[in-house]
Image 1 (tube, rainbow, N blue to C red):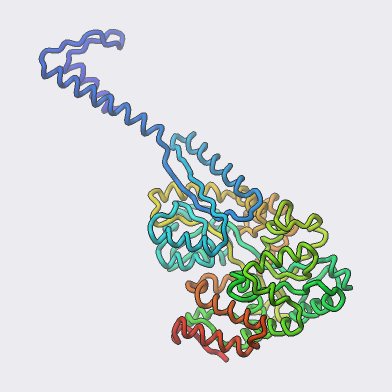
Image 2: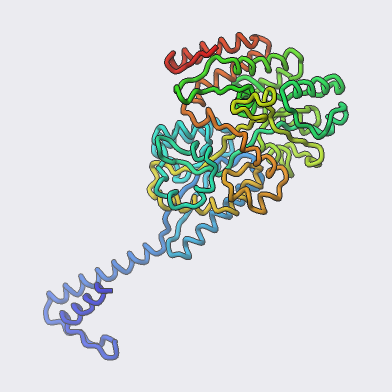
Length: 484
């Protein structure tokens, strides 16, 4: 305002401008110098005017990369929300244009692509990051620190402590949890009924799981009793959905946080390997299917067809595998699919002395370290993380929410399954997921050991001995701990 006023005064004084009722009607030019000055002045005014127009109509640019995969209508809803954010920002006079990059492949190549982009400084502003690899990325300083944002953000107070811990590294928060999971023992009620088993099943020990599987085998030839998997080809869920909860159920852990070492031998580790050895020797699983690269998909399909009885897997499977419109939809799913908590090896034998265990990981938002506009990126994350919006995302994807306010919404509580498995967070473990390095040698060697048991090459003792030697060779003797 002052600049415009001063320019007006200068213009009137220098060129002897006369006005009548606010309108210029005469300009007296006294010299060629004044003509030149007038031309320069008009060019400045024109440039300023055109620059102002360009600034007003040019939106800020923001990019977000997510892994869509099998998420029902989630991607369409997300795109609608991104459009809503653009409209909201335009109304505020700060327009933004968002580019959505949706990766539809498997986890491993997505993580590799993300790592390469972050390392080269070409990653999108807002990232969709799996908890398992998040610790490695945080340690590599690939993410923008969020401390200044979350200290004024109320939903952070609603976030469960174990997820807060998993989002942080070296005293700083780098990720915002948006979805997690519980691990469920799914079972076919119709098969249980045919085999003479109780359709309201909640095993309280490993013996009860094995006993039910043996009954299925005896009464229903052609049905695979247990859909457990093993081997590195079968992927992450070999360890995450199956082995790690069983290890905790036996009273063990894979990582000693106090000593910062990987536990390569222990009684609980041996007992967990023995569980795999027992179900293999009793022919309660199909080894060929169990070690296949598409083992999870095959198991989901077999379960949907009523050819497999018990499948220990993530809570997301209820919607994305067997829900309406899913690849292996079970039309009467709510009637025939039962779900139970994972029991301790025996009551009270779990790592915390509880009767049941759970395992949680999840996916999170992060801001790339190379983002040119981290404040705007945070504004988008904040918008997408609104309570009702998060409840909707989790409900449609069948994911467990990471915040108390989201879980308590009417929309979230309408789903009987989701409400039930969310209550299991009291039993959940995040370790060793929050420890950098898990997604490398520890996980890979575990999967290899389990696979060798399933195909009959190793017994439990050989599997533990081989796992210990392999991890010591990969990480060094100072990184491992023998307790048996």
